[in-house]
Image (cartoon, rainbow, N blue to C red; front, side, top):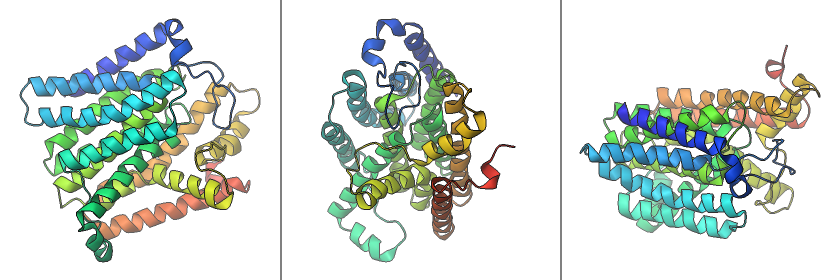
Amino acid sequence: MQALLLSFFVSFLISLLIVRFERWHVAYSGDNRLQGAQKFHSKVVPRVGGLAIFLGILSASALVFLKGQPEGFSLLHMLALVGIVFLVGLLEDLTKSLGILTRLTGMLAAALFACLTMGAIVTQIGWPWFDMLLGIPIVAIVFTVLGLVGVTNSINIIDGYHGLAAVVSILILSALAYVGYTVGDRLIWSFAIITVGGIAGFLIWNYPRGLIFLGDGGAYLLGFGIALTSVLLVARNPQVSAWFPMLLVIYPVIETLFSIYRKWIYRGRSPLLPDGIHLHMLLYKRVVRWAAGAGAANDRRNANTSPYLWLLTSLAVFPAVAFWYLPLMLQFSTGLYVVLYLYLYQSLIRFKTPRWLRHH
C-alpha cells in the first residue's frame, strides 16, 4: 500500500509541476500539431505525462527494493526494460522527429532483453499444433517479441481522447494485479498495482480537462508494461491461461489489427499513416459530437467519448477475471468480443448507431 500511495503522489506532483510551469517547456514538450486526422484538442498541451508516471513507478519500486522485499530487484529490472521503450517515446515527444524505425528498434531491443534476461517467453497458448511450434525456442522468442511490440503500439493507437488510454490501462493492470495476487506472484501484482498508482496520479490532470497528455512516451510505457507483466504472469504461473491477458488487451489489439487491415489491405495505404476512422473517433463523430451539438466545447466532447470505451474494455476485463484459468471460456469470450467490436464498428461507419448508444 505504501508503494501504491508513493507512486500516486509522485506522479500527481510531477504532473502538477509540468502543468503549472508549462510555459517554460511547452515549446519542446507541447503537442503543437492541432490539425490532423487524429487531433481533437484545441490548444497546445504538454505531452510528457509519461515522465510523471515513470518517476512514480521508479520511486515506488525503489522503496520496495530499499525495504528488502524479495521482488525489489526484479521490479527495478522490469522498470529498466520498460524505461528503454519509454525513453524512445519521450525523445519523439520532445524532438517530434524520431523515426518510427528508431522507435521500433528500441521496442524490439527491450522485448528481446525481456525474453533473454527475465524468461518472459510464451511457450504455449493451448492449441496443440501451435504449441508444437512454440516448443522451438527461436519461434517462441520471435512470437513473444512480436507480441510485446504489438501490444505496446496498441495502447498508443487508442490514445486519442482524455483519459481513454489511461483508464483502459488501469482496468487491464488491475485485473493483472488481481490474478497475480491470487496465484501468489508478488512481482506481478506489485508492478501492476504500482503502475496503477502512477497512472491515477497523472489521470487527475488528464481527465476531464486534458491539461497534460501521455504522449508517445507514456503510451509506450503503459503498453510495454502491460505486455511484459502479461507475459511474465503466464510464463511464471502455468495455471494462468495465456488467453487471460489476450482477452484483457483485446480491445486495443483488435483496434490495431483492424486498423492495419483497413489501411493496408482494404485501402492499399501504408498502415503507418494516420486516419480518422478508429472506433473511438467514430463514437466521437457519430454519437458524442452529434448529441452535444455544435455549440459544445471541444474538450468536453473529447472527455465524454472516453467512458464509452471504458465500458467496452470492461466487457473484456470482467470475463477475463472470472475465467482466468479456463482456456475454453476465455477463447469463447475473446471471439464474442471480436464479433461485438466488428458489429459496433460496422454500425457506426454506416451511420446506423445502435439504439443503446444514443443519448436520450
